[in-house]
Figure 1 (cartoon, rainbow, N blue to C red):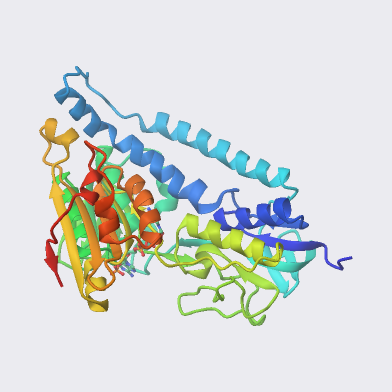
Figure 2: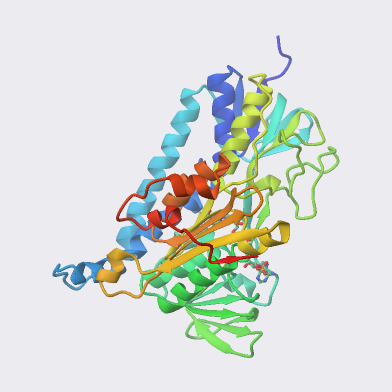
Length: 453
Ligand code: NDP
């Protein structure tokens, strides 16, 4: 007999929290409650990956229309109706939210549509004052966009607002050089918006392989995006016609929309963690061990709030591992090594493992790289080039990294990731017969290293 109201109380109904709640309840028979203050599904479903990818699809049609003409199709004048798209998008998000909710209910999870905070190591309080006890508490509160404190910051929007714009702007400024900034620069550009992107560093997409990010940046510029590196906003001012951005390069330009994508912060504030003994890190993240346990044994945390790798599939695996560990009696730690990811720029970038620069500081390597015009767009007379790149250990022959810049690179890297996680060597890649004609066949046909380092 338990003296607690619940075996598990989950705070946050995003990717990590929902998975943990469902597995604990449905697979392991735990008595679970979950509190969510906003919409079920969290950042990924409601204001992140899902609506973003649908916008990526929407923004790809002008290029597809141009290709279609080259392939002999007569395509009439096309126009984009933002309101029609947004209405459909909202309906799709409603459908997904309902699906998440019904999955939880079917699993037997009690849902509280409320903010929840911690009272102590075993007690949670809802916004209406009701309090519940739980043997275990899982914090899966995710993160939120961070906007630097510059004069006029309130004039800017973040990715949260991008899905609800009343109308598309004519001129947009995107600030930041990471995943979100680069993806939205491409989306808006594809939808016909005049896009400028300011990034404070020397090249966008810091942390990825230099050649791959250079390739993406060149393609983005060729598509019409004005990328200004080494440039940051000093202040934003409201003007009669829009928003003036005064930049560190001395320029003053006017835009209709300014979007900041300058990183995200874990949602740890105001949760009642102060004084409980839960360790909070330098970036406001909850510090956990490999089993997602905090310094307080009954309190666990998964997903973006822990600031490990901020990706939905990672949060899902952390949540699942937590449920298996605590309720299934199977100690499971998610392995954060060799996690593949894709940046949904146009072209996409898929990558796993080490970039060339990081790999060569670790050990002697061979680099295999090829850039070429893919059949589909070359036929249409487009200049687009794709990049396929493998980083190989000279000592073990293992493929240490794979970087693809190409349409559908996200799909390709998912499959390459299986081989690389299994420890495939360059010779394993070489023994694999090509699938022809494809872009990805280049991954198994690069015979000679481009360079060694
Ligand atoms: P990122 O950390 O990817 O990028 C933040 C960007 O903002 C960097 O270019 C950074 O510059 C810049 N920046 C940070 N602080 C400031 C500042 N004070 N002034 C000016 N510029 C600043 O964050 P995002 O917000 O793009 O994305 C958050 C996370 O969400 C990502 O890390 C990723 O894990 C996840 N995500 C994943 C996606 C996917 O899988 N496709 C899509 C979207 C998000 P610098 O490089 O100099 O630090």
